[in-house]
Image (tube, rainbow, N blue to C red; front, side, top):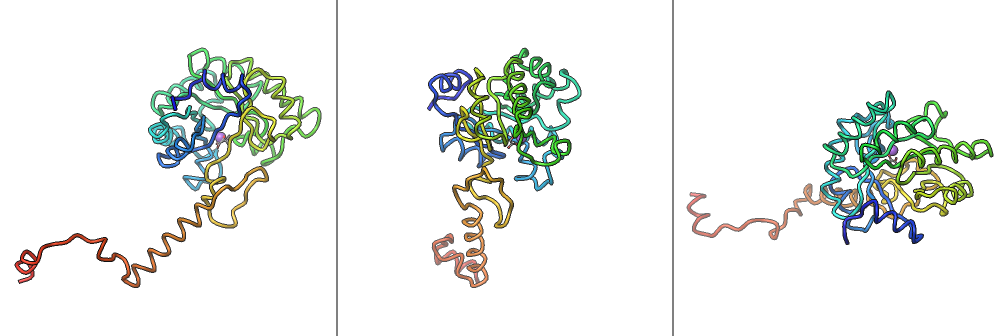
Length: 279
Ligand code: KIV
Ligand code: NA
C-alpha cells in the first residue's frame, strides 16, 4: 500500500468507502495499527490516560505529545498521521495555535493536527490550514472541556443541541478542516450531519452513518486491566492485557521454579575452554 494522503482520504469519501482510524501512542502501537491497514493513525491526547497514567487529558503537555508523535510517525509507513493539540497549546490565539501546530508537524513529524471545538475555533483553524497544515476538527463531546460540559456527556440529544453540533461541524468545514471527528452524538444526528457536510465525518460513539470510525487502541484491543470502565460505544475486539498478564505470570513462575531459562535459551562454551576457566 502507498502512503495515505489527503487525496486518498478524499477519494475514499467520494466513493463512500468508510475511513478507518485508530489511536496510537508509541512505536509498537503505531506499527500494529499501520500493519493492520488503518487509513489514519491518531496520536490522541487520550495517551495522557492510556500511556502516561494521568487522570485526564488536561495534564499532558505539548512537549510530551511531541515525543509520542515522533515515535508513532516512525511506525506509520502507510497510515495518514494526525497529532492532537493538547489543552493549553491553542486556545489563547490563532497565533499560539499555529505555533503549536507547526511544532507538532515539524518536531512530531505527523502529517496533520487535530483540535477540539466548533464555531469559536473557526479563525484558529483557518490560520493553521492557511499555513498549509491539514486540520482534523473535533466536535460533539470534546473531552478537553469536560469540566465545562459537566463530564463526559452525550451531545446533541435535544433538537437545539443537535443544531449546535451541526453548526459547529459546518463552521470547522468552512474554516478548512479536511474531516471532522463527531464524538458521542446520537446516531441519527451524526448521520444527518454527515449528509449535510461535504467533508468526511469520523465517528466515535456516533453510530454507523458517519464517513469513518475511530477508536482508542487500548480500549478496542483490551489492553487494560479487568474492571476498567469502558464507554458504551467501545467494542472490545481483543484481550491484550490478559495475554500479557498470562505471559508475565508464567515467566515469573518459571523463574521461581528454575524452569526458565532452559538449555535452549543459553550459550554454549566448549569443554576445554570451560575446564581451563574453572581450574
Ligand atoms: O485523544 C483521542 O484519543 C481522541 C479520539 C478519541 C478521537 O481524540
Ligand atoms: Na483527543
